[in-house]
Length: 273
Image (cartoon, rainbow, N blue to C red; front, side, top):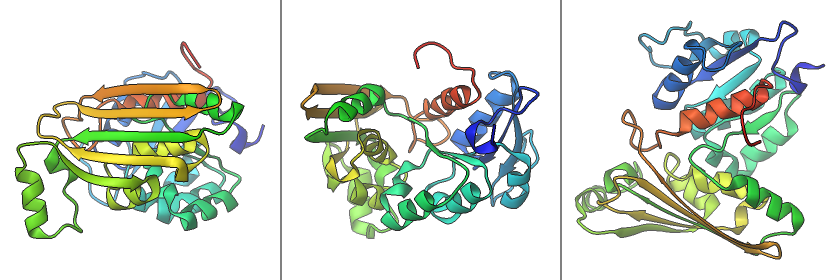
C-alpha cells in the first residue's frame, strides 16, 4: 500500500507532525502524547516561534516531512497557501484546519496539481457536513447559508482602520460585520470564517455559500447557523461552541475534530462514520 493511501505503517503505527503550536496544535499534541489514539505518535512540531513544553521536537518543515506520515496544519491560511503543495508533493498527507485558504483559486489549483500526498479537511467547528455532503451528492443544492455570531473583539482585523476597530470593540449591541460569499469571507476574516469554507467544500460549491457575520457582545458561545435547501430536502443546523480559552477566535472543540479525523485516517474510527 502506498504512503498516500494510508497513514498506517506496517507495524500499525502512524506518525504525526503538527504545524502550529497554539491552541489547536498544542491540544492535539497533548492528546496524542497522552495516548488518546493508541499507536498514533506525535513526532514533530513546526512553528516559527519557540514553543515551550511541547513535548515533541520542534523542527523545520523539511525535517518534519521526513519523519511524518501525515501533517496537521493548525497555523492559519498563510501556511496552507505557502506549504500545502510542497507537503503533498513530498508524499505526505496533509490534514487542514484553515480551510479558508482553499477559497483562493490559485491555492486550490496548486493543491489540486500536487501529490501523491492527499489533501484532507477536518470538520473543525462545523456540524452536519455528512448529511449536507450526501444531499449534494444526490442532487446539487440550490441554497446554502452560514450565519456566524462571535464576540466583537475577536473580529477586529488588521485591515480595519482605527475608528472602525474601536467601534467594533466597543459595540453594546449586535452588529453585522460582513455579508457576502464564502471566498470573500475567508479572505477578510481568515481566523473566523473557516467554517463557511468547510461547508462549501462539503457541498461541492464554495460559490453557493452565502455568509453573514455578526459581532455580538452577548455571544459567550460562538454561534453558527447552517441552512441548506435542494432537491433532496431542507436542512438547518444550529451550533453553539465554547471559544478556546487560549484563543477565543477559534472554538475549543476544533482540536477534538482533528483527533477524530486522525482516528479515521489511522483506521481507528469510533462510532458513527
